[in-house]
Image 1: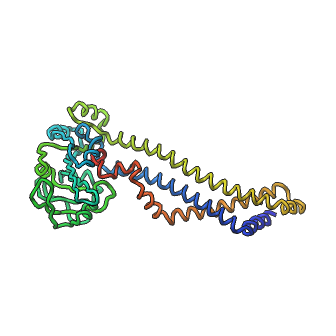
Image 2: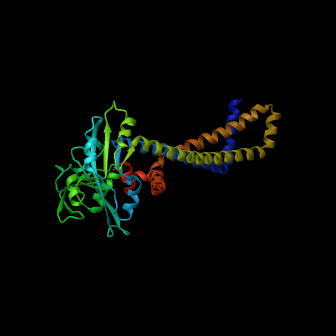
Image 3: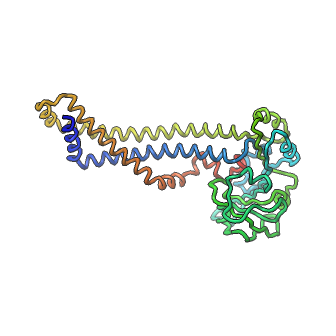
Length: 364
């Protein structure tokens, strides 16, 4: 009897092909939305976590106000960045608790001829002896890092190289200098803010941008057996220096992601409810239209549980086929979904990390 009920259920779905097709499409699209949103949420959270973990810093020292004001200042042309004395940085870097550190000097230059509305180029002075080790994920498409901290050489991020149309062996004139700087390296795409930067030796940057003895940031990695909280307390005593704990930054960002996850789950639940009511409508219409047929089944000896089982099989078939098709669709069009989300990424919290105008806060 169960086989006959299954056959009747299956044939009943085929008898109403248009209604069944529309219901399957509704379930399929809702499943696509559900799987895509959940995948995006998990991937977005993992991407943020990997970006923060990949920075190589546990603690960042900046001048007061830098993390919160640098982005706005750079959008307006890069003037007004705050700096801290290099002697303070040197004293921290020499502490026995510090396993590694790298000092950096940022300079943002607004170019009105770049693009339709102008653009900001970020120059970052780095120490070639310490910076590559702290940014181990950076790989070269061409060339290598500059030879020393006084070299008149630059390394260009992937996007900056594309924009400037430069490759290894070319020369560039930096703002504030009449000298030609040789491009000795072009980085591969990393998917981070480093793609849009122009790197040059630290001492050269201090000279070119007339910031001798000044820095914008110090990235610190501690020894494994050091109490980070206790060490941060000693840093708070330094004058005119702001301490940014990357663990705190990570927790703050993950809290924001958690809030966004609630919204994503709410949208996913709405998609699920839409599909559920679509199936319910199809099943109810099927029952209402089959009173006579159900009566015939009962006269032939079918029990109420058999009728219920027949309706349940129809519902299961609809949901199963629609769900499987939706999952296949979501995987098949995952690239399209990712591209559509990326086009709107400027309004997402993740754009804070990837935006060239906020590098001071998280990494530089």
